[in-house]
Picture 1 (cartoon, rainbow, N blue to C red):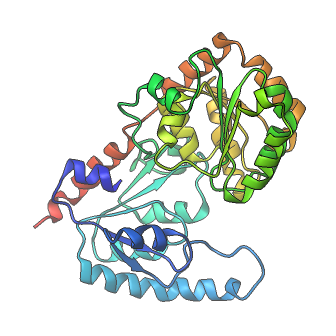
Picture 2: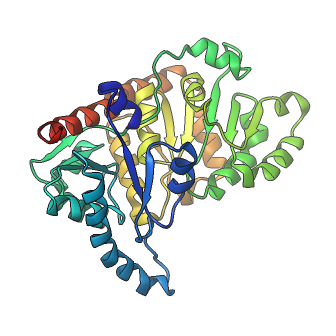
Length: 348
């Protein structure tokens, strides 16, 4: 979003408001710009029975006047938020001060906090068309802001990963949630699957020891076809464009990236967090744009069966074409334009 706003209006000034819990302080604070401001409320609400169950509502209440004072000092022309618990005091303060705001909801089924924020926000941007039903006429479909995938040459991307033109490349990643089930299925099927697929597996730092051990148990030829990596940061866009198939969770960003690229996918919804990912995956599957396997059903045998069917290029092409038809790679630009339009009357 920061890149999109600066591309649309190079002189734009940005400030970031975060909470006392979450990784945004490290990510944004390390960059030094935009300026980082922290509220008392934690970015993620406690779900367990501990002291924070009592303290979180207190922090939330104290964050409202804190947010009001922050907006008094910053005097922004508009506020953009991805919703959730942290957005409640910020958007409430923005509304009280007459500052326009846009809240973005990335899942088919919005969370309770985002529904509440949506009632206070000026406009609501959503990733999936069915989500419009949860809000009123102020809502619009924007898609999910994602990394730029423009200008990436597929042949060059595959060559950078050491993948031959006639190889089938399976890209495996699990997003930010625990992926024990996915890792178990992949490792259990390796000896079979690596005969037909080259696998790039983003195993995470914690999963690398197990991944390397699983690789060592393969014959040398097949071992070269399993490429575990802790993560891909700058190279993730290239890996997506290079892949023939994705095995991943069904978070908003994953759904947005596979549709923006136009790639076949097997989505394994994270079974917790309100079951939001199940609805995301089901919507893509209903459009013929993805295969869906429940987390509890993802065994090595089930993975082998799915990959055997998806060896057929025609089957993958049908999924990829349907996914591409849903893709909205310019989502960040769409939201940036709407945000700047709201901000127009407030600019000096």
